[in-house]
Length: 343
Image (tube, rainbow, N blue to C red; front, side, top):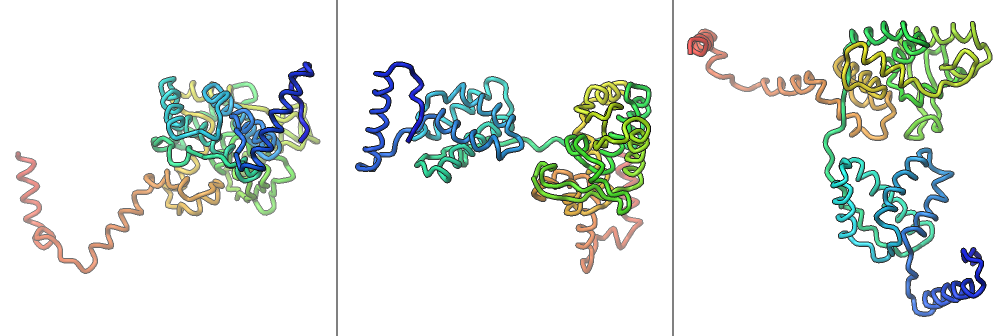
């Protein structure tokens, strides 16, 4: 094993070397597992995550939160009590259960990685100790409200681009990053499809997105602007100089505020697409495939928007069953109704 002792003092370096030699001997001859600190676990894990994770910056942010509590902690002795104390401390700091669970998920992933890849014998007390989370947010708007946002957007700087962005989002259900990173080579006008590779999607899975008339109109608007200002740009959403658009949040938020719509974000355009599909009777499994959800459970949060499914299911119970006395005597039901009104 070769590594820096982290000091210019030769005597100190020799002492550190001897300590590591002793630990290696105890591990080999006595079967004693060496102690692993929180920092050791995270350095090894992040070294791999830097090249393998798309959301590496998010992981770094979560590890930073963990460091403030677990710094210097020997991971061999980590227990459920430590996890509960962390959750309680973060809860008192005002963090939501969802945020705390994501931080603990990063800790669990780091421990599991070291156990599998490095064969370190470490406990993982995070398992079974996550907090209960409320139902996921489902915020969506009507077609009239989308039209209002687009009318206001057209009056703003880069307004036509913002309108095309909004129209494409509500007609495809694409995520913001998927649209801003969309290249013309992945737009198939002939077959009316957008192709997304695993590197472009959150779930790292390929998917094809069909284009309806609304989505086609939005893309044709982008194509017209490209032909006029930057014919060589590879990006669907590009500035007039051909550069890729980094973000449209400020313009979007301004248009939403002027339209008088509250508590609505860019990501809610994706919820809006899903809500429109569910209320139109599209099966949840088809919506899952369109949105690129990794599991059907993620799509089921929209199920309450389709009461017709449950209504049709309940109506089956009417078949072959005797009805109440009022179904055989409608006049009796009317009489009951009159009495209720009079009361």
